[in-house]
Image 1 (spheres, rainbow, N blue to C red):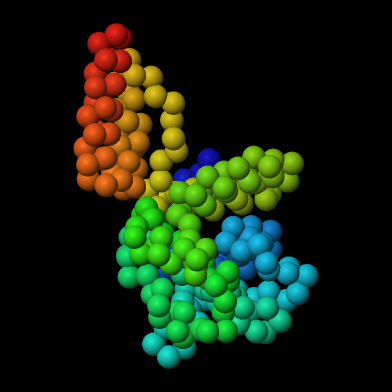
Image 2 (image 1 turned 90 degrees about the vertical axis):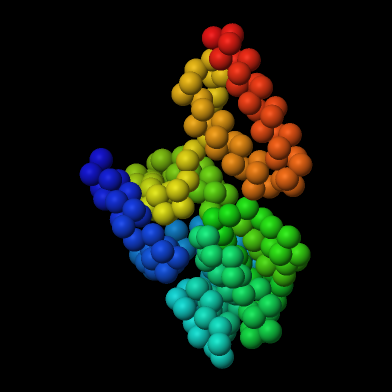
Length: 217
C-alpha cells in the first residue's frame, strides 16, 4: 500500500526526537481516540470527560518537556520523549513542575531501562517504544471493525516503527540460516538488560544452540 510506504519513508527521512514528538502530537490532535490511547498508555488517572489539552514543548525556566497535559486548563501531567538521547531531565522536571505528582510524569525511550530509570521508576511512568508498539499492534487488531481507525493506527505504527528501528519478534527455526536475524535481535536485548557476565554466558548458550540446530538441519 503506497500510503503505508509513505509513512515508512517519512520515518526514514524525519527521524529525530523532535520529529517523533511532532508526529505524536499531530496524531493526537487529529484523532481523539489516538490521544486517549497514547495518554492512557502512561496514565490511568486522566478523566477524559474533562477538557484535556496536549501541549507541545511547554517551557518553564530552563525546562521544556515534550508534552504537557492540561486538565481544564491546569497543569496535571507531563511526558518526555527520547529515542537514544539519555539526558533524561528526571530531577529537572521534578523540581520545575512540583505541581505534577509522581504518578503523573511519563517517560518513553528507545533504549532499555538502566540504573537511573529504575531509580526514578516511582517518580515516572517509564516505558520503551517497543512496549508502545506492541501495545499499539494489539490495539490495531481490536479496532478491525472500524476500518478508518485501524488504518490510521497502522500508519502511526509504521512511522514509529521506522523511526525507532523496531523489528517484530519472529519465530526461530534453528535449522534455518534465516533465523540468524531473530537470534541477533534476541541477543541484543539480552545484552541491553544484563550484566557483562550474564551477557557473555547468554552469547555462549545462544551460539551453541544455533550451532546444534544448524547441524541437525
